Length: 298
Length: 297
Image (cartoon, rainbow over all chains, first blue to last red; front, side, top):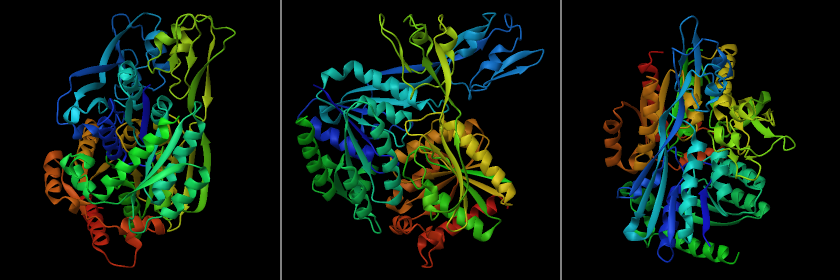
């Protein structure tokens, strides 16, 4: 059975992509693994893949095309647009402000004169990669096109692509975005194991707590683990984070703060592959083994 | 209120909150002061970075989101709602009745309008909470806090900005600083729309450069004036040097990496208020001075 592991964390920049890429790399050594980038606003796993996608599927969304011949300027589309993206120029025509349009299609539904035609614009794309990291992994990357802004919809589309092929894999590792909104909800809903990467700072803890609230609200049973990354930072509040994790009964690990990580990142190299002896790489290997041990029994 | 400045980055954890909080203090010490907006509505921490709340000025719930719901006594399972939903918010298989996933519903009303049995209603739901607080060192912050699993973050950002402008008028502050969410989605677009200036925070790693380029595409579609801030620039000098050309932007500030930044969050005291002189503190000051002279304030 395919195990789906989501890597998220609340705050941005805690090390989600770093962990997801390294975890997927380790899993891919022994099992069929798919690495998914669901951080569609800024899909960073791509910077680690030095190869071209085997396929790219364009995702489009609706935009109204108003026929000035059929339009009788009744104004129903303007009144009913939930995003206020349509503007009436009295006596002349109806104008679309494309940056406000969400592509819902309500204007077309309410038009009594059939004056609105459907046109489509690209909202993003989903890329499929085969055999990345020397054949260890396959990958799916979802990407939102800048200036369109339906992050959650693009995440759902990406997950739908994953759903179609996930049965071919033992593990699916999803690099999820930061935050606690509907996009994260979609990823968490899709996964059975949630790994929350946080950092021992006040901001990290605050956002982790909000993410935990979302986790508590999930309807299906999931398992959540926490990784405190960058442990050992000067002035950290490690004890406070530990205290919260103890109270909430979450299992956790920590990864030491390690400047090698930045160096590996800049080079686009995978830490456990290219810097296997560094303290953080050693710790990730241990975490990955224990995590597998933990979810295998379920 | 004269000027609205957005601080964004595309990637998370680059130092948006760090820059916003310290600029807010510097505006307060050296100019007419500023009101700050926490537009990272899914994970708001700006108040914390500014010392925590001393006093709540006001708070209120926002009920601007709409969600569809199905009356199953009326629904006959025709699936028309499923066909028109542009947001994948309805699950439907022939022979069963459709289910609305409320987390994904935009409340656009398309399903309600096409339902032949009038079985769908649109109801208002809680978007989140909006509050204005005075933080420990005197900076007023307007925060949008989105309900967990929520959407319509754009609405709450717009409302937060409107409230910040009113508060700035009332307290005679000339600047509003917006701490944006990571990413390029709804809350970020709503933070940049109509702003006067964008400070793009970039750290010298490819992931951050990619995020910055994506934000820049949005900024350019608005013709929004943009400056770049290189944060933690000394972590990789070589990469840092490439960034201005890659982005085609002028660098208005360069801040070195310093663990004192984390420490300042732990102490809940913006670094620029630290009595101890440091390179970071000096560079923050340079950034502020340069910003002021560029804008001839």
